[in-house]
Image 1: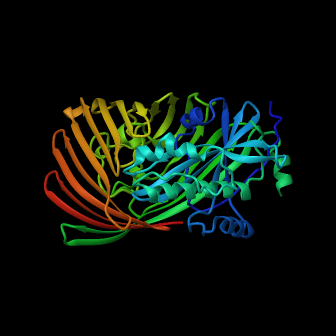
Image 2: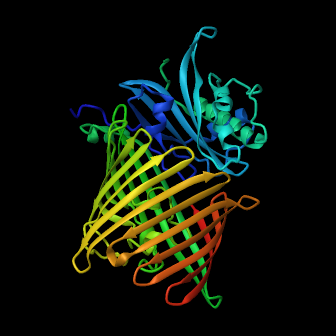
Image 3: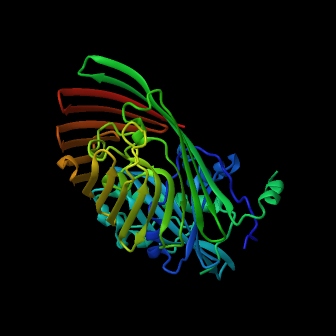
Length: 188
Length: 292
């Protein structure tokens, strides 16, 4: 029974700045209906990784962004996805974005690539909240990868600042995943 | 070192996965009736949270808050500090169990983090309890959340009153609205039964957030209402207005306004609270929280 190795995957002592996933048990039903469990991992970055993230992003990480939560999603014992959460400043306060990622086999490069499965907003104060949370806006992210430029995303009219903040947040999570993730998600 | 740890703990089924340590220092300048001015270190906290998982699931979460205050029993410090619990997580969608010292699941206490808030909340006048030692069974079922806790019972001065409260809450939760109904039942050696029913609501009317709760109980025929509204001001300043009314043998009423600005590791706030119970009191509080 007690035969699983005691492994130290990630033991990090860090400061504040983590955006927690508020409703994992509930959101998983929407993001990964077949999921049977999830594991939390807190990842920090080295100086080199920080430089890499900032250079790909074209912006500095926030002062309090000292660590990132990775939630690995399982169906039985298979890893089927990954969820990252991020808090970004919108027009009327913080917007908390939940980005779910899956792995897909790319026939052109013949490699597995990480793409967006779905994006959710778990908390916001925006006047155009309904539109920003709506599928018309958020479904545009599905299938995008770290290489995407997000030029084609149609922003919510009257909430351009917050729409751009969400785009930035999603891009940041894709970049963070690419730089920090030491494990691969198996294709669906 | 890691190899030694693996050898030593090799028999355990769990994997250390994540640990988060952070802290905060809360300093306040308090002015009573625009005369008595007092500067105080309200509290210092060190929070340690670690999550342990098996091969596919988070299984055990430990949360420990090490608090310090030079005045533990005044200013309601003990209401808000000193979490020390373990959560045994069930499989996805199954009940979870929390054991230790935690917030009891009643009304707004369940979803609203009030531990650095300047404005008073209804539980301070009604239940006179927020954190207690015991066990809580909680979880989700579709859009519903449920909680039932069995605790020892501590009075407002943090000494055991051993009235064994049973607290339960059923809530509905979606993106725009949260509401719930709560029940509290305890038997006090001197005061007898204390039963309380409460309803609470949190509604986003963006950019405003409305929070309200009402309670009624058989002990001293207590009843009360608390309404709070969060609103953006300008330059990233957040405002909160609050009104509170509690009636039992005495009538307590208060209203207040809090303005808060978050700047990186700092949270700076100013609050005004007018309260009336036996006499009228006007408090002005300036607060600086340094997050570590």
